Amino acid sequence: MEYVYASLLLHSAKKEISEDSLKNVLTAAGISVDEVRLKAVVAALKEVNIDEVLKNASAMPVAVAAAPQQATQQAPAEEKKEEKKEEEKKGPSEEEIASGLASLFG
Image 1: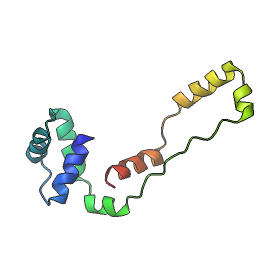
Image 2: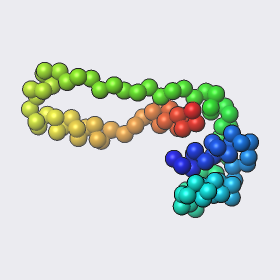
Image 3: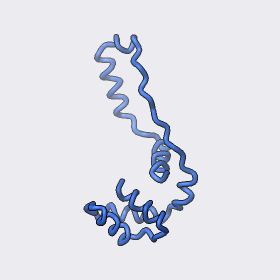
């Protein structure tokens, strides 16, 4: 996450997002730099129009936990365990991933 923040800082300062500049920002912030992550972020951002992403980014909706219903409270423990296992198996959809990436720039 720090790499994205540093990239946004460089972008807002109208500086080039390069490995050296990103490394300098992270080092100045007291963060030890992982060279692999550094190269990956710089390579990924070369193909991204940050201004366009920021313009199109929208706030990510926050889910509010619903109050437990009485029927849910009375469900056997086995059913609850099965539901948790099913939820763990499901990964985020491509739309959720895309909106998560957009929220990094907004």
